[in-house]
Length: 156
Image (cartoon, rainbow, N blue to C red):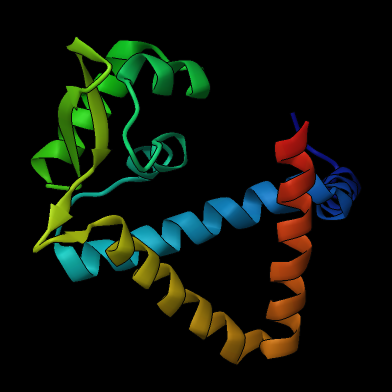
């Protein structure tokens, strides 16, 4: 089947006009480029699948079942990702203080410092590059607008 170039152009224009589509694509590209930088710095095989876990892990720790439910994945799939990140010293499993039979997954510490801070440092470096390309005003406005969007979406 031959696709009409006008159909392709129309589809691309509609995708670019869709806020959701632009946000999803921008997030994917940011994640891919940030992961490439993490791999350069750490030589760890961190993949986007690993980083999708991070927003679902509470700083005090979360149970795998809760992470899986939040993500809409199986416990086995989340458990596998956690195991891989444990082997990289990014995550650790600790006893759940509220239930002696359960374990919590939390961000590991390296030299007393929360490993998550290293990932945020990579993102800050990435953001500095965007400021150079887009300018401080545009990045500040973007941060403010995305923060407001996040507030709205989290309140639903």
